Length: 563
View 1: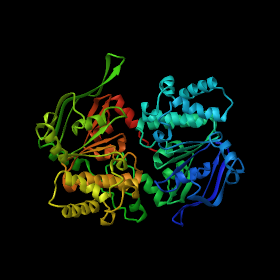
View 2 (view 1 turned 90 degrees about the vertical axis):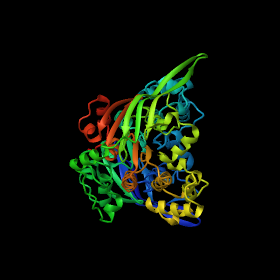
View 3 (view 1 turned 180 degrees about the vertical axis):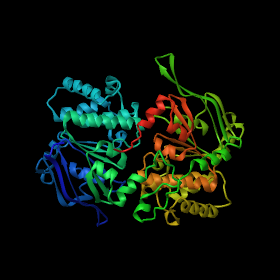
View 4 (view 1 turned 60 degrees about the vertical axis):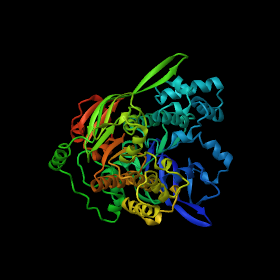
């Protein structure tokens, strides 16, 4: 790290305006970013991290936001004094950004190669052919497995990790001096996440650039950053070296961010949350002992299984040419048993078949071969009329609660809807009473009944999704990546809620996730999937302590553990 200051942010205050009311979202934020330094900016959603990055890039929405105080200097030049033309010369050329969600940042109607060429043609004097060669070279640098294929592909034809690499290639195309990475690994597999972190580190060393790395995950940030700035509700909480902040945090909020992530060595009965630390009510140190766990499992496995999956296969066919078909086994000869009151963890990288397996159990996809016995009945042979009744028994909590809620329905109506469809309770008055009860059960209340989905935060929407799922009083719930896009702190709240509901109502969970520390915390038994097959299965604690297969070892090594 060079001692020369590249970027200096001093006493930055940003306000947003709505209905003539001013809402200050950043309060006197100050930090310096040196040449060849990686600075991590950590905080929950809504803390102001992304607002700070947009202010640096001059991308705040003019009509509703303004910098009310402070200064931003880059190479000694005040960015706030620049006009749009001068800013445009810096943006992309000197300061570039990797956005949080590659699918919404890439143009779905343009091939990926063309999107990167566009940047080079705008900011450099390269010809079309030279730009194409440069793009292919960039795609190799960001370790895309097949650069020529990626160049000719549309975004939807690539995996999440590959799309993120395209975004990184776009950001480094003009060899910027400063790269802002806004949550570049959120919702990616742990192995892909580790690859992206390693890639950014290597590119930073090669190009001698500085990186502003924004994330809600302090463990992850501590693996890449030299220094860390912690922000809470738009204010600076802590600022110092990565090592000091991770190992000797001074502020309660920083301690909360570190402790909200489930640890691999201890199984707490309840995860500590941000509010526990800030309100000094952290009494959640109760540990589930090995003996308690063994006794619990003895009770669980003494009964017949609730669900039995026997030699299940799911094959998809795609056309290759006029007459040939290509076969893809998304689920390949999978067998396991699930017992009432159990949480079965299902892990593996994207594309391994986890969600497809979940969909075949839900009968949203028909198995190509094999049996799925629910309470002893093969549900793959049920007629449609009986599958409708089965929907009450087996429910799903979606990954993206916003996409699964109707934006035109109030959340109260959204929760009542499945009750009406399945004719639960005598009338709407009873259904409304039950809905309010459910809202209170998931930590919301009656006052939320008439609000719309867009009025809630991500964590609140996930609670609404859970309320909607349990409205039908199911026996088995499939949680498909249901906490993967949530902040670490909100994730802890939702995991605690799922465990409370399980204890209260006797739910059985299949918990699908790519986050192994979360699955380890939740699961009794663990299934590790790879290329449609079960790679390893057994007690979650035993698999984490001594994984037998190289694939499982790789997944466990990739979990961010901090410095």
